[in-house]
Length: 397
Image (cartoon, rainbow, N blue to C red; front, side, top):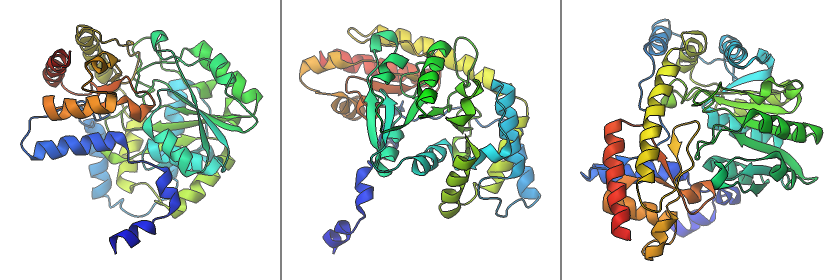
């Protein structure tokens, strides 16, 4: 019976893999339940609480019985607020008809790729990449075209490198800056060159702005503010990291109205509207005080500096300094010389079972010499975990 049931699962499900980041969290949780003291560097989740004013807006929404269905693509009030916030932050000029609210940023990306990519279409993705891009493109029947980047130059992707991978089947380019997992930030001039390249060839450019406010040097930037960008640029945004609202599940897309219409059609048959109460909280996040963001950024900078220094103290470990987001992506391939671990999957598994530190293997992001360390956790936990990591590396040598 079990075999029969497995055989009947739709083929398209076999094109996607289980999210590595969620698997690491599950493995760490399992050990914790067994009483093991685990230091968890796996989750891409702020350790800050949701700001008080945002929580209060949700409480008021419940008290006012704002608990019914809303428009499938989000309330007009929230779509207006998202356009307002993006305009205030980046100088764009989106209208509510070019905006939709989704169940987290991941949902915006899923909807977009399903609405845009036909079987056989090529999607260009720089490496390292966030885990979900590859699986969602595969699910749509598209073909991922990976562009390698140079670790010694901070994993920066260039227009010249992308140009070499463009064919007449290229439909979409995905750029994630600040980048998850590497923390690299694409310089504005290079971003503009990339946009010039894609717009000239009528290729869509998706800018994943999940970490857009967490930039350590210079001002946050959106390619969507460039003249003419609205024709071929699609913004995938999220409130999860910026406002410490991961569990609230509110994301958004900004795109040409016909694309929003297609994404909305899909969403109307999948989730329908994002949670009404979370949408009210999101309006407050977008229109209310923004002072929680610099506070978080300052703390992330302090942690980044600590993590980079401690990693560089481990003999043979190298790391490109993260310029944004809250991840370190060290090269731990020195550990493979011992013969006890062959790649970062082995390394991560051994590190969790022997040293009780959870990290995400680089294989999840398209490289095999790295692990992702989230420093969205307390300095105390960072210290404990990096002590353990250092000892573990010493024992491997």
